[in-house]
Image (cartoon, rainbow, N blue to C red; front, top):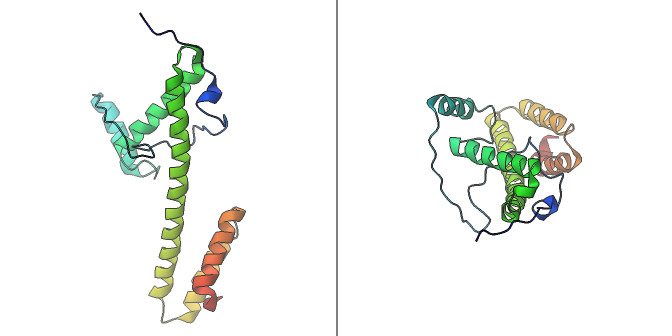
Length: 171
């Protein structure tokens, strides 16, 4: 006897229907508890070459490996199919997708915070590299402050606070 499937309500797997975007990268290899599965698939050489070239080009820094690309592609295809024919998609699939989106949002935030730290550390390295010239150091800090002024409010405030704390003596 086959299990009867019920129609799926998209809000079951994505409470905020606006959170999914083709522009987002969904590359988490495991859930928040560290669980993940491995899949193996054969692909034609031209497809693999195209994926490898894309990843190696670093045009999309979020895609560091071909596995990142595959996870992202799977996520987008699941979303597409669930929207296209939601009456045949099992609610468990939709529930999994909702969980993946929530986890990806958390991972994206952590990645952004890591990038923030790298930028500040790189700025400190550049400023320290010209420690023999206060005028050059001041120029670097002024340039950094100028770049920060165009950022969205949250990041502008965060960077400005960090710059003033670390390099206030050069402002």
